[in-house]
Length: 339
Image (cartoon, rainbow, N blue to C red):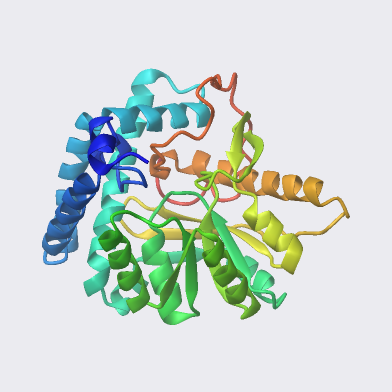
């Protein structure tokens, strides 16, 4: 195994390369630089009015957009796969709006330690509550699936504090100090963070047994254990865990998206739940259910591509861009918030 110095010398990713939080394998000293910068920024943002915090976030986004060339290139490739007819100038503008919205989402996260639930509640509008109630009525818990987009922290914080506890099933961040900060901040608002590990999976199953709600994103196969399905018309590896859990436990799957609106409030949109009906062919059922969930992700991303921030490879390097747009069957295009 390479030493820390060898990994750094070999060009391990830095903050700008990844366009955000570092992942496993990066240089520890760079991770600590990132963490200290994050904490310094957080100290400032939580002491500023919300509007000034956003202004600072936009300044940071401009720097990241200019200097995070690798992250920007990966993001633009993903956006081009989703929107193949978008000309390059429009693609660049979309990527900039994406960086800006992502930086604002970090500002929201940084303010959570000092946020008051009654203030947060005014920022969120919820559409599709009937779908959540239909899923909860099954009495098997609810597994919420989404993509890496929007401001989940705000929605999850409001829900946990006012309705019922929420657990997030997500990757562990590095350095450890940053991960513990995330966990502590969310715990204060009633959100449990379950690590994306086998031990974390056991906790997910226990939470569902207790009829709780667990949230996870499935647009990246972080663990490398997913299955290959079509995502925007091209094969991509997608986590199949939600489909497998739903088949095993009868848990409804609820696709949910949270979008930032032009006035910096948020819209949570719940789609009709996906119920995992078994045909007796488990592999085929997992593939079918995962494909149905991916279709919902495509709708979310097409509706607000400027909020889908994934500067990481999703499709194989050799995958060609989709040859043409696929019809989006959106049920929420009336929502505020421009592309």
